[in-house]
Image 1 (tube, rainbow, N blue to C red):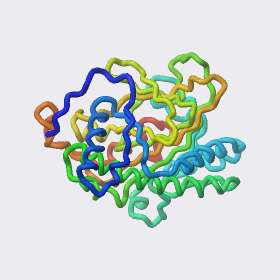
Image 2: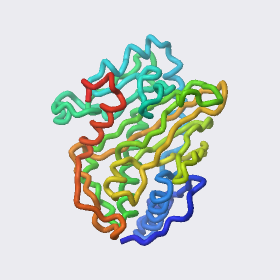
Image 3: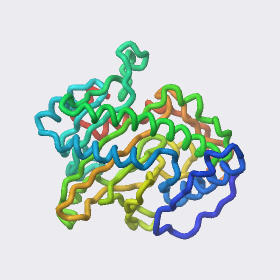
Length: 329
């Protein structure tokens, strides 16, 4: 059992230095994991620096993101995600509604991930988000850069999953069986300028929690991410160069029976007349990996043993937020 009493309601998001997490010294890795433990119990969000991915890779990915959305609309629609069996490709403006009951989100996107052949067992089973990518033929550099970026974030996602396990007092390799077929989805997102006031609760990205294990967010200097604290206040998460913002998804909250937080967040582009670009990457374990509620968290967070597969929850959430795409999930 890990003893920690969270402080009063947080007003900012912590910044964690990952340098010692790459050490051969287990105690140094545990010290970083303890900082993650504290962040997961107070905000469910934290910045990471010295994460191992060069800053020039991050800058190039943001530049490629802008270049993609600058393509003519007809070129983007040629790879519309509706033409994909696994929702890969271009997402036109306002096709997703993350805050149920609100107008559609003011953003356009592009989704890619591991490129799996038709013969892959999970493709044969029709699992959502397992299949082949679509890429813009007019801009081959988008594919080259983004595929390299996916490999970098896949490696970092596994590293963070090990630290997450350590932070819970588990063996560092606790999630390792879910790594080989880990699901990694990278989205390029463009949020156009919007009114300085929120009208009819329409945002760039409506208030929501993420669904899976971990999200690694790369955002440009515009910022725009806001995280809701326990008092219901929206905390801004500004751009910090050479960092990712990491947050937990609902599966972690389920696994810890509420000890760790999957926190409500949204995007509101505050800067009038300026577009916002971001690249969230969703790292999840093998679709057939079973997440189980933990038993070492003390009486306050103890629950009856429960489990679900990663796929069961993700499939439900994709169906819920992409109502017009139900046949794909």
